[in-house]
Length: 224
Image (tube, rainbow, N blue to C red; front, side, top):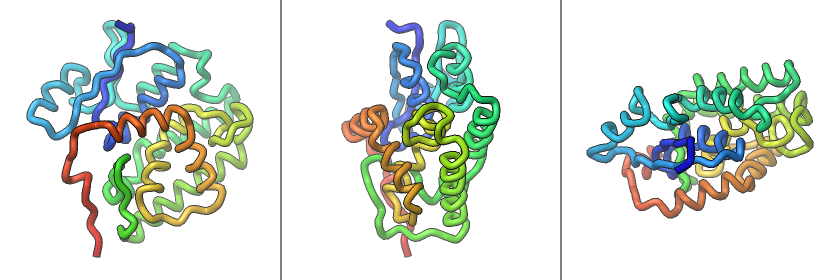
């Protein structure tokens, strides 16, 4: 058994689990994965074994229990400094953390209108203006990060160069923007394509396809 345990919810639906999982994969550390499917009769009981909030993801490191995706990322950045989850440059690191925090605490209209579903697309979906405004804001964050700090962590195609914590935080949006009909500018589309092509995203997506659980409320969409 590995020293680290990551408890997550359904890979098909849980955007927050994806964020924590990607960050842990980036460290290269061995870990045991526990998947607790949502909306089952024993879901909350099982989740409380790993998380005091009863929400996923949760990281167990010996006696340490860390819940909430962003807290997991910060913990991993401290115990695995060589993984360089955040840029070494102070300005780039502050920018990446600000964007990650904005994602963590914002975009509620988008989350409600576009629940993550790794197995389906909804080409006929329509959205209110507030959702469109949030899509535009995310694109602006991406384009600004690429323009200002695209080489802060290497020469890759991600927000700071190589795939780092900020990309883990926005990875579910890359999936959402593929499942739902949104207009993306060319630079934003290139970023989405790069995220979806990353080996860890492919690994998660393949596992999501194989999951047996179907939750009806994530399988439909309100269309006119």
